[in-house]
Length: 442
Image 1 (cartoon, rainbow, N blue to C red):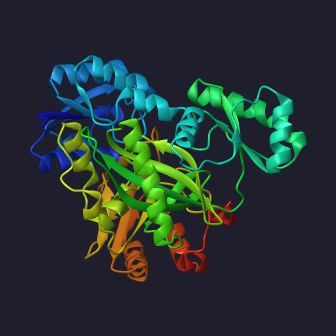
Image 2 (spheres, helix red, strand yellow):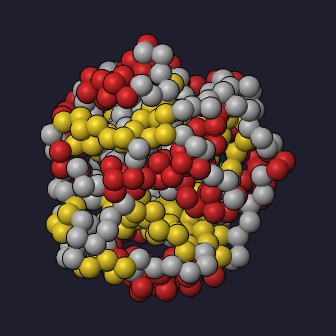
Image 3 (tube, rainbow, N blue to C red):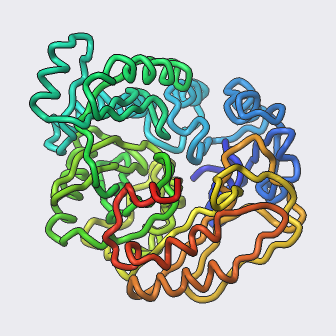
């Protein structure tokens, strides 16, 4: 087992990893920017190292500074959390070169899945269904043939993309050239790669993802699905598990396809297969080679600590349970609490003057904020995750209603009121919402 782990992240996920390490008797090293000197993960870690100024580029994305911090603190492993460098192939390679364990897949698997074009090909070869698409868009005749075959609308996507960057929806053929050029420019700016491709645009799908966990000994399990369809501008807001619309047969079939694909790749660690689901068909979008923000809902319904399991398999241990041992019980919902105005969505950094978080059986809060904490303006606006669990979906919803009413964060704007509206809406209660749900609030 590792003796000391450096946590290459901040906020609630850094704290989540720290707590898992503590349960495993592993010492922790927190890195932080100058702006995060008073952050909770820094206060709670065994050691801390400042890696740069406030900007993420100069600190949490500063690979030389992070590697230096790992070297001077003599760590065995680095946990990247999510975001920042968690899916950066070069970061994983450098860690490997320094004989430090990257808690995640190897750099080659990050490379394979980091490019959506190559990921689509790999999944197609493994019989995982993909959205009809066109990878080579250099020939306009091929594009026209593709559109004639699949019909408009289509969507342009960045091959190295994420978070909605480098994406354009085309509803009229006359928009094609302008949209491709705009997508390429945005992709270049965001990912330093202007490669884009085209897919059939599904008009009202659900966003369903499958959680996998595998070790280095050839053991792979899937841990059910999450419905992440409530999202704004491709950023998820509410996630729940299990899905309200999948049949058990559909769940078993797609999970087994994902499990076999992971086995064929020899992949190690946690990962998530993301799909669009429409008219009882699954369409692969991408594989995230890291822990997901929404991992708590899976933990709640499977009673599995994904972060601890991730650390254990990275240390070389075998999974201590099989697919037959995985039991989906109850229902869980997660609301992402952001420091932003609930109607304009404008970020709201500042000092938390009063803070009270909800509690009770089946209520969980993953957060690193506290009263008098000053939320910096330099990073993502998510400040907490509110998770509820109940024997049924109805119970979980009722617990979420109560928890949102009890949650007090004063001094900044938050989207708590927005979550209250969503949770009480007929579409959410019925479970028949899709990825277009949030368009009414724009």
